[in-house]
Image (cartoon, rainbow, N blue to C red; front, side):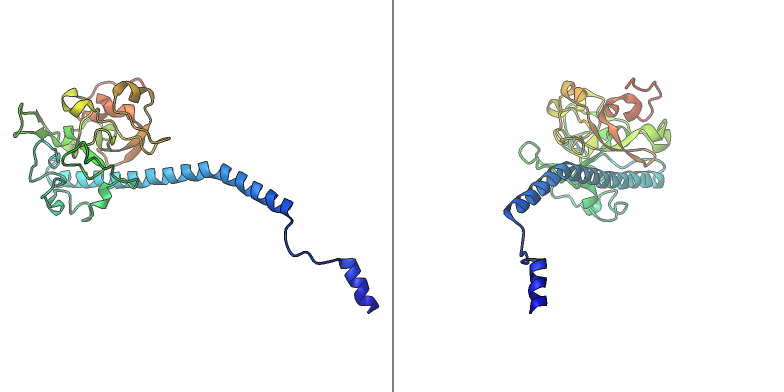
Length: 259
């Protein structure tokens, strides 16, 4: 009995939990850690979405190049809202079967590869019919012919082999959600800007993801976006490059822009 009493005296009463002060300290530390880690986690998620989107775009670029190689350098039709054509690279309009698209077999038989992981904005309010995908193809490679509207607009295509510096000529982009309306993209001529919207490259993966369709604001807060070039490689670029002839006109051989 003496030994047992001595042992209890030395050890003291056994504690069963935290005090209120200790619990509040732990909660405070956890709150601080969450505040520190959340921006980093958000940045990591944004980067992961950007990489996944660029992977989709590279697959589209590889499909376009494979098609051109099988057709003597000629690309499929532009999937324009002005004129639906049998060999459109994607059949996106209502009552058209996407399985009949020129690139369907090259895309692995999946339409999901044409959608950014962040989703496709609902444009049903101002686009009829709405374009259901995220990526558009450079009209200067595919060409554009509109025979069912006045005036008739025609842009000649450019064969893959005639592109000057294919590694710097943009073939397809993730287009700004403010301007995307069909499967074709051309940012260097005002006659193709529908409703005054300039078809910039999307910056939804950059910073806060805000997108501006007016030139003045977009060039000040230019941001970066996903594109794929005519040699098949993809980049997350300063989107000012996508309105410069050096990067978007296939047979342009002039000087690069100053930026």
